[in-house]
Structure formats: C-alpha cells, structure tokens
Image (cartoon, rainbow, N blue to C red; front, side, top):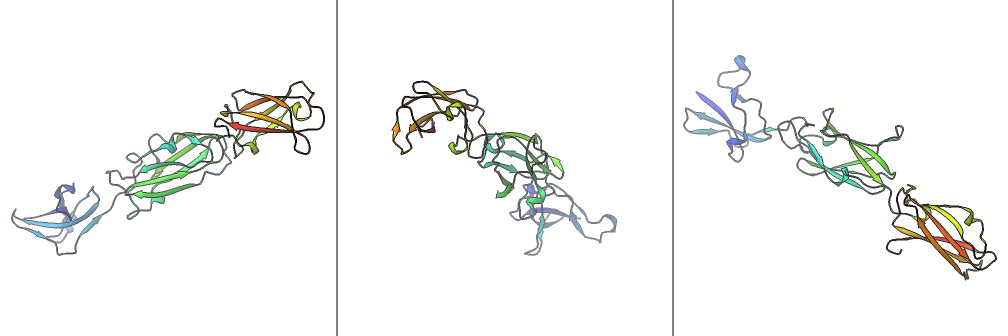
Length: 274
C-alpha cells in the first residue's frame, strides 16, 4: 500500500489539488504511480508514503514542473486608464492580468504572450484603415502592459481575446478627443482676410485644430488675438474682439484705424496666456 502525494519544493502539500492515481491504468507497471490532472502550476517533488509511516522523498534533483494551461478569456481581465479614453497623439496604456482557467498566472517563461493574448485596436467608422500599432510588454508574472497611440481623434474599438474567445466586456469602445489647439494647423477664413475699412469691424472665422489636424468640436480654452503691422513691421493701431462659438470655431473681429497696406497677424492664446 503506497500512496504518492505531490508536494511543492517548499513542502506545501496543500498546493497540489489532485490525488495521485496509478499511471496508465491497468497497463501500468506494478508500483508505477503518477499525479493526475494537477490544477496548480509550479514545481513539485514526488513523495511516497508507506503505510502511513516514514515518507520517502524522491532523489535530490528530481522534480516535476506543472506549467499553466491555455489562457482563459473568462478569468483574465484588463484594467487601466487606457480603456477609459484620452487625447489623440498621446500613449494610452492599460494592463492585462493573464491566467488560465484554474487561475494560474501565465508568463513568458512557459508560454508566448504574443500567442496567448490577441490585442487589436481599430478606429470605428474607418473599415479600410489599418489597425493601430500595439506594444505588449510583460511587467510582472502574469501581467502585461498594453500601449497604443493613435493620432486621429474619434472612437476606437479595443479587442482582447485568448484562445479565439473575447474577454468579458470586450471589445471596449474608447474615445480619443483632439489635443490642445496648434496655431499652424488652424484654418482662418472670411472677408476680414481680404481687407477692411478704417473704423469698421472686419470678421475672421477660425477653425481650431490640434497638431495632428484633428478639428476641435468644443471650445479651445483660450482666445484669438490680432495685430496689424505695416510692411516694414511697424505696429498699427487695431482693436479686436474674439468670440468662442464653443464648437471648435472662433470669430475674430478687428477694427483698424489706419488706412493703407497692412499685414494681419492672427494669434491663439490659451487659457494660460501662451
């Protein structure tokens, strides 16, 4: 009557969840035993108990390694700010706790993270557009960090899958808003760009955009300013008023008082005065 138990290398019998059974069933050789279907990954040393008495350990250096099973989309999960929305052109990051169906963490020592976890980020409403590049980095055992960056504002679908099955709650829809206004990307239009009459207001309409060309759809958090100069750079008297339509566009009204050729300079000043 010999019974084989599985203990971890630290002597912890509770770490093994499966009882020992004869290996190979009826065809097994007399006295041959093996651990059946262990569910806790780790490194184990076989131990033999004779009649409930002294426990005979396997020879030094002999140990069995139980690796995690395939990644489980049901038990694995993701969290982080990169799933809640952000700013176009900035890196969005979140983390994935990757484990098998028994809760064993999956790391790069026993499995290829790239094959175990499928990540895909696409811009919604753009079917012909290539997926957003994604970086996958293992940061600790069973945890990987996902980084992605998209220059276009809009709604993105973040998909996570393991074994061909989507994670619970995915794909996740993540909205990226335009960044702060970038003067060189903004577009000005209107009669005030072609000329004005001394003492009368002239209007210039300006559509705000960020450095990636994304048009703002809300107020930019600042104001427009204008200045007039002569051809030689001499400042000319000019009053101006800026109105924010709160839809990403502004109207600038300037009032010149000096007749003659002039250069109109339109500037954006953010809420901090820059």
